[in-house]
Every structure is written in structure tokens, then in C-alpha cells.
Amino acid sequence: MLLWVLLLILGLLSRQAAIAKKSVVEPRPSWTPIFEGELVTLTCHGAGPFKPERAWWYKNQQLQEILPTNIIQTNQPGEYRCQTQGSTLSDPVNLVFSSDPLILQTQYSVFEGDTLVMRCRGKNTGTVKHMAYYKNERKLLDLITDFDKLLSVSQAGLNDNSKYHCARVVSSIWSTWREISKNVDIQVQELFVPPELKTTMSEPIEGTPMILSCETQLSPQRLDTKLHFSFIRDGTVITSGEKKSHVLQIPAIQTKDSGSYQCEAKAMTQNILKKSNYVKIGVKIPVSQPFFNFSAFRAQASVGDVVEFHCEVLRGSFPIQYQFYHENTILENKIAPSGGAASFNLTMTVGHSGNYFCRANNSFSYQFSKNLTLSISDPIRSQTNTAIMGITVALIIIFILTIVVLVVYFKLLRKSGRSSAPSPHRISSISNLQEPVYSNSSSQKELMPIYGNVNPVAENVVYSEVTSKEHGKEANNTKKLPEIKDSPVIYAEVKQKPQSRDSKKTNAADGRQNVAENYENAKLF
Image (cartoon, rainbow, N blue to C red; front, side, top):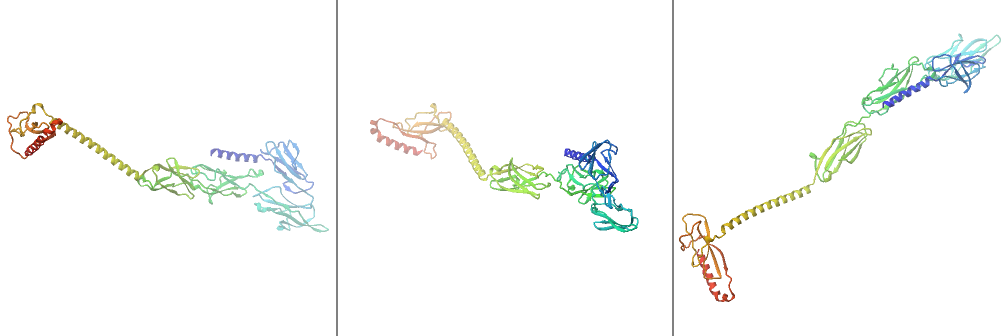
């Protein structure tokens, strides 16, 4: 930006320097046309102060001579130019000589704001009776006396460009006649060209510097003219008309500086005011950080839910483009031609969990929103997971209970094995007894099992009976107990003892009888 401004200023200075270096031809007398035979003095002015210096003279674009002085005299018509050392070629001066009896003379150059002066001049020496000046065949001035009076138009402007001529009535001793001059095209020259308003940029960004330049050019013959500049925004002058600088600097342009700009250049002495073209300046506003949200309650949604994503900036020149991101993937592009917010809907899947954000830009600036995290749940999968978890927990509980039961069972089994194991000293062979024998103890102590054969006669049948005796003592007296309903008698096993095939037939009947008797005896207890 600063480089561009520097180049702009240097360019303006170089253009002004180039203009200042152009040579100028000044004729004396400063009237045109002139009568044939009259002598005209031409002076070539270079870039510096008016002083004698070497000059190159051109007539009808042909180099005529190189003189050590900048002044020549001539009575020849033609287009004259000159150039001095250090200066460029001058604009032409056209010398016109006339043989007419009456001519209308004007200045060689008339600029805006100057006083336009014309004079009607004749050769004849008769007595002038009447004189008049005309503009486009319309009489401007009628003189019956004071015929040397000049026609003056003050504050000449471009609207004074017209055809002028004069006429007079002359008399002598012998006659009176009327003389009319040829038409002269008056071209009022611009003192300076209409200014052009230039800016470093037509759409500056808010907060950046901007320079406005009111550029114009003075005529090479009027480089000493003083110009003052004014800058106008939306019809209101924002700088003084006394400002001599043609540059307006705005250090940091703001939105309030937007508008339609124009500049004015005024030649204070000649009171010539010219306005530039209009330049529309729109200050571009960078986008602010966007606000981003979505419609999911507590940042959670389920598979199949439709979630609306919303992105909005509060400041920024439009159009504004919005981009919606999931992680680093663009989901949607939206454009707001007139500014405002943008939204879009998305049906959720399991893969849509993660971070979301949006980006806003307006071709020269951009901003990212803050990240928001969205969690997506799958009800079916959740139910399945819950069921699987429940089953797993149940299996674990069952497994634990099974282990506990097995442990308890084996403990009881081990304890039962220890309690039921027979001790050799506690077992008595009661082979001759027919009745169960009990141990009678006065104190209730732990009962130990006693095993015995009820009917040892039958060799193939064994009947085991469990009776109790006092722990740690042998029963001193054994006797046949009376029939007790709740007698603690346990039938452990009744089985047939293996025997030979020959003895089976002999003892079959006796065995069946003995078993029946034993069964009946056992029921008594």
C-alpha cells in the first residue's frame, strides 16, 4: 500500500516536472493577425528564469536555425516552435499576416478567467464615422465616437468560443464606404484541465489507509497559476477550499467514510472553479468471527435424527460465503448474497460424531467459528449392548454362584467324609445279635456310627445298621432297646453277597426268607 502511494506521488511529480520543462514561445506584439510587412519579435522561454540562452527554432516543423540567443524577429507567416537546453519542444505559435484593409486583432492565447480583448484596425486613413463589433453575426458593441476603444470580455470562458468580426464606416473628401473584417475564431484555452479524482482503491478495507488525489494540469504558459483543492463527500466539503495540496490522506478508513467523493480545483486569481468526476468508495468490512450452533439438545443426538446447523456473522460486507465442517471435511457450502446467516440440515449417522465448526468469508477476509462437539448414539446398538452386558453380568453371577455352591458342596462333602469314615476301634462285630444294639448315655454328646451285621447267618445278605454310642467311650452294657418310634437307625445298604452257582439253588429259599425276616425286624425300629 505504501509503495503504491509513493509511486503515485512520484508519478504526479514527474508529470508536473515534464510539464514545467516545456518551452514557450512569446510573440510581441501579442496581436494576431498583423498587417503584412510588420515585424514580430519571438522569445523562447525555457524551464528556468527568463534569460538569454541557446535555442533551437522550428518553422512548420522544420529546424530553421540554432541561435545563441532565445529571441528572433520575423515578418514571415507560419507555425513557429522553439526548444531550449533542458526543455522540451514548445507548443506552436501561428503568425498570420493580412493584406486586408480592416482586420480584427485578438491575443494569441486567451485562457479561462482572462479578459478577452479585441481591436478593430484598418489601413485607410479616412475619417471613421461608425464602428461595431459582432459575435456570430450578432452586434455586441456599437461605437459612434472613441473608435480606438477596445472590445473587452471579462472572465472569458469556454462559452466565449465563437466567430467574431468588426465593421466600420469610413469617409473621405470624395466618398464614404463600409469596411468589414474577416471572421476570427476565438478559442479560449483551458487554464487547467478538469481535475480527475483518483484513489488507491475504490473498495478499501476498513481500518486500512487510503489516499485520494485530485489530479489536474496547468497550461505550460500558466504554470505560475496557484490552485487550491477541496474534497467533497456526498455533497459535503470535508476539506477547506484553501488547501493547496491535491492529496487527501485518510490514515484508517471507516465505514462512515463510505460515499460518493468528488474534488474541486480552483484558480484563486482567475476565479475558475472546476469539479472532478464522482468516485464511489465503498468501505469493505471484514467478516467478524461467526457464531456457530446446532439444534441438538446438550450436544447429543441419535442415529436418524435431523440436526440443523446454523452459522452467522454480525459484521461483514456481503455477499458472505459459509462453509460447514465436520472435523476437516466440508459438509456444505452456502452463500448469503445480502448478508445474514446460513443454515442446513443433516441426518445423523454413527459416523457423524465429532467436532463441528463453520467458516465465513467475503472474498477478502475470513474467520473460523469455535469448535462444537456432537455425540451420536445408536439406540439399537445401545439396547443390544445393554442386553449383552446384562447377559454377561448374569453369566458372571451364575458362574460365581456355581463356584460358591461347588465350594460349599465340596466342603460339606469333605466334612461328611470325615464324619462317616469308620474307626477300627469303634467297630464291633456283633455277629450273634438279632436285634440292633444302642449305646445309652446319660449325657447328650456327639454320636458316632457303629456298623454291624444283623444277620450273619445268611452269608449272601449283608445288612448294615448304624447305632450310636457315646463319643470316646465303649458302651458298657448293651441291651435290646424297646421299640421307639424315632429310633436313630439308618439302613445303609442291603446287598446280596456273591456266591457260587452250586450254592445258589440250595440257599435261595433260605435267603429269601432271611431277607424278609430282616426287613420285618428293621421296620420295628
